[in-house]
Image 1 (cartoon, one colour):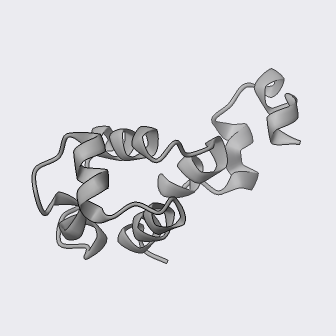
Image 2: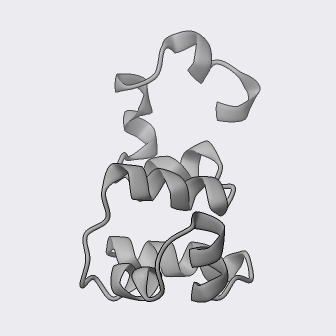
Image 3: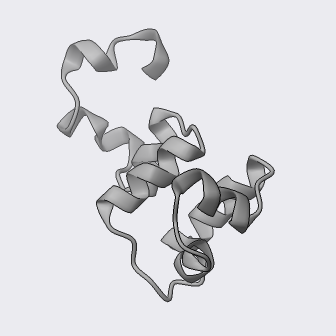
Length: 87
């Protein structure tokens, strides 16, 4: 699944239209459509705005950024991985 498809799936799972997500993110009209259609490659800042607006959990954010869950140990300190959220 490509990035645009992931964002579309997450948006639809939260029951939001493209316009509603654009308004939550303060994006211009058509931005989400271009991202979901893979016409535009979003910046990290844009992905963080989308993640925040969709209230994604850590696993969803990692997936959105292309980080495999089993590779999180490379990016997160051990004490964070041992917290209940990751078990």
